[in-house]
Image (tube, rainbow, N blue to C red; front, top):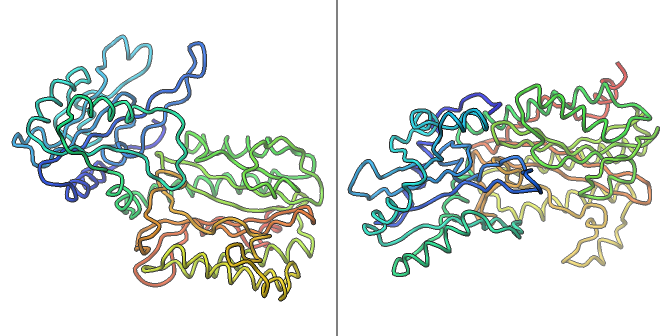
Length: 430
C-alpha cells in the first residue's frame, strides 16, 4: 500500500458499532471484491470492497470477515479468513498479510487461512439463527457484475435453508455516513493532495495545452504524495465540453478565452476527495464569465450554511434551488415569467442547474448515507452547484468537501484550495 498505516482502533470501534445493532444469536459475513479480468492474463487493479475494509482494514483480495458477537467461544466472536501466504506467493505477487500482520492491521486476534472457512462456518451456523448478508443498496448502485458477495449469498442460502437472514446494509449505511475523527483526517489528507495537484495545474495551464496534459499533471502530483489514483474518473472539460456533466474523454485542446471545468479528486488510503474548480485558459475571466462564476460561488457559500444537524436532504435541495433561481434571475438567464409558469417537478432553474448540490462522501465518492434521515454532525458532504450555458459555450461548477459540525457552519476540508476568481487569476499570472 502507498498509504501510511491506519490506527486499528478505527476498525475495532467500527465492528463494535456494527455488532451492537445485530439481532441476538446472529452472525454476519463480509467478502472481499474479486479481481476482475480484462483479457488474456491481464486484470484490473484490485479495489477492496468498502464494507470489509471499513470493518477490518484488510486491503487484500480473497479475504473474509465473520463477526458473531453472541458466540459461546470468545475466540470466534471475530474471525478473519485470509489467503494463505508463502515464499512462492511473496516472490511472484509480493507480500500478503500474515496472521501477525493481520492482527496489527485489524485488531482481530483469530485469523485462519481461507481453506478453513467452510468447516468453521458450518460449525458456527449450528449455533446461530440468523445470518446477515451484505448487499449493495446505495441509491445510485447499478450492478451488472456478479460479486463474491453474490456467490456467497446464493451458496449459503442453498446450504442453510432453515436459517433466517437479515441485511447488513441498512446498519452500514447509517454507520458509514457518520465519520470517525480518524476517517475525517484521512479525507483531509486526500483533500490536501488534491490541493497540491490543483496549485500545480494553475501554473501549468495556458492556451494550447490539451485536457489530457492537465489530467497527467494531476496524476503526477497525486502519485508523488502517496495517492494511488484519482478518487473517480477525472473531468477536464474545456469550453463547451463543460456542459456535458460527466465528460471524461479529456482529449481536446484548451483554447484561448475558454474556461476549463475541473472535477478532480485524489484518493488517500481508499478515502475520497471530490473537488470542482473552473479556471480560465488564458489566465483571466471575461466580465461575463466572472459574473457567472461569482454567482455559482455565492450559491455554494449559502448552500454550505444550510448543512447543519437536522437538515433533510430533500428539503435542502429545494432551498438551494430557490437560491439558484435568484442568481439566474440576476444573470438574465431566466425571467419572472419562467419562474411563475415553471413545472414544480422541473423548476425553471433546472434548465441551467440540473443536478443535485450535495452527496455523502467518504470511502466512496458517492458514499453511503440514508437520504431520508436528518443530517448529523461528522457527516461529510460535497457542495457543488453549477451553471451550464451551452449557448454561451461554457459551464461553471465549484465544489468543496465539508464536515457538518454540532453547532455553526460546516468545516471546509478544502479551505486551502483557491476558489475566489481574483485569487485564481492572481495565481495563474505569477
